[in-house]
Structure formats: structure tokens, C-alpha cells
Amino acid sequence: MLTLERAKELNDSQVTEEHLRIHATNVMAAMGAMAEHFGEDKEHWMAIGYLHDYDYEKYPEEHLQHTEEPLREAGLEEEEIRAILAHGYGICNDVEPITNMEKSLYAIDELTGIISACARMRPNGITDLTVKSFMKKFKDKKFAAKCNRDVIKDGCERLGMEVREVAELCIEGMKPYAEEIGLTGTGE
Image (cartoon, rainbow, N blue to C red; front, side, top):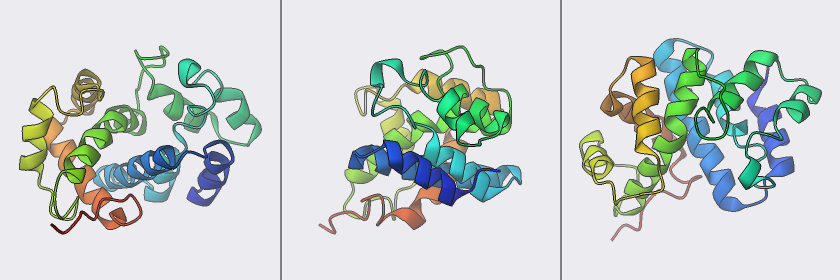
């Protein structure tokens, strides 16, 4: 089973850009919260979250097309590889998310982008971000416009959850990592 330590080792061997490492940490934290919600192995889900964009920096136009074999060679289990591949469903592949882990990663990859953008606009960053504030920004399609709201909605629907509910879990999951992800705010 993939550990968080091994996921960081693998990811950091491929990813050098700081913003991509921060995104990996955001998704890792959110996946931990989703695992707790579903009563699953938190560290395992966090490891999958951290490793999800393994090939993105080197192959942004061919994302997830250079993931499967290297991760298989690195010893990942088929279900772990599939979970990572499924976050690209309808965007860059046709691996449909089926398990709660796959559906969660699919939904929160884009969701954490909007959460981060919201937090960057606040004096206290993510530390006092509420789901109510998040939802206002989520409804504004011009805010964090590159984050695909249709994917988020589809992922949440697949989980049988409301966007608000998933966002709240993710925000709370990300708060303990505020310093690491640069979302402590300016204090102004």
C-alpha cells in the first residue's frame, strides 16, 4: 500500500515547481478529510492525493498519459493507479471514477483551487474561511475561472453529496496545513 512518505518521494522526484507542490499538498489535505468522512485509511488517501499530478509538470498537454507505467514500476497497486487516473475523467481520459476514493479525488482536484483562491483574498487566509464565503465565490464563475465547476459538481453528485458539504470537509482538512500551503493570510 502506498504510504505518504513514498508518495512524496515519487512526486518530488518529478515535480520541481513550488506551485505544483503546494497544489499536491492541498489535494493531499483534502483527501485526508474525505477519507475521514468515509471512514477510510487517511494516510493512504492523502498519499494518493499528493501523487495525483505525478506527470503534469513534464507533460501538461499529455497529463496522465505518462503516469500508469512509471507508477506500476514504482510498485503501486492497480487500484491506486486507477484512482490517480480517474481524476482526469472527461478531461484527459475516460477512466470513470467509481470508488469513493476515485470520486473524491475527481471532485476535489478542482475544488481545492477555488478554496485556495478564496483563502488568498482573506486577511487570515484559510484559517477563518467559512463554507458560506466559499459558496459565494463558487457561484461567481469569473472568480478562479480556470477551475472547472462542472467537474466539481459532477464529482460531488457522484459522491451523493452537495458541493457545500464537500467544500466544508476540504476547507477543514486544509486548515492545519495553512502555513505549509501559504494560506495563513496577510493579517491586514
